[in-house]
Length: 293
Image (tube, rainbow, N blue to C red; front, side):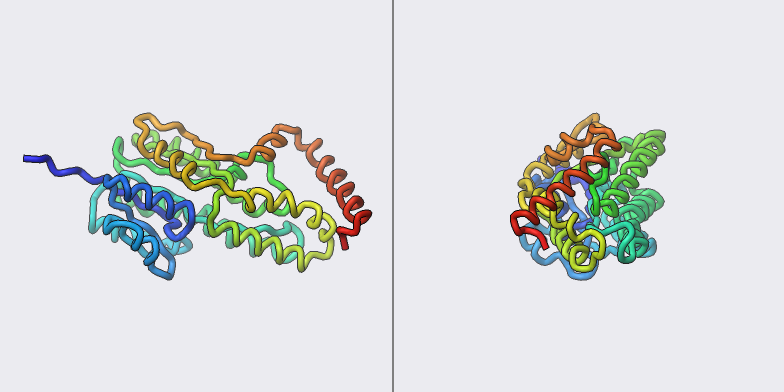
């Protein structure tokens, strides 16, 4: 008699997003996983239409601890052990730290990008779904989590630096219980975050009273990576490696932006001077050629 195949279970936040959706589809194609894919308000009809019935939609508001607890209880109706918890939900915007309402921007982003991850992990741990030597937690950080923050991208970078610290602390805490915690730092991949970043930049440019010349010069650099996103196959391959490795690394990078990585080792003081004078010089050139207001 043929032995019945043992399925593995994964819970993936950000199920409607580009990266999370690509990972869910890849997991489904293996035929080895039952995947719980989250949605906030609209069910994942398009994603589920492309996948088998092994992809199960779970409603989740990561800004609510009650919603996270309910999601964990839903999963418990299918299994008592989660093999992988993948925290991939997040939002992005570009904003000033002094103009507009930076505290409101940061509150919203921290509530989703950082506290959302904390809430979900707590819910699944306290529901006893994360088991020693069986489960693993994968947190999606960003290249912005290890690089020096770029001007006007600081709100997002702040949250990802916090994700880095949280993941390191969580890894060392759960190591006592034999539950690996893995961090992934993607570069630019096409997702809903691109639209959020673009709209945030356009809002900033329209409303600024101090930075219009600077933003005009920085615009090409800010949008270069977004206009040339990497193929999803790379982040999918990285995530699959983190999921399947018997002894996973604590950190994986996937297609980080080469020119930002190149300048990152430059000491902060020199970088500050470079931004100020290179951008200033760039604005003068733009004016000379009639390209600036």
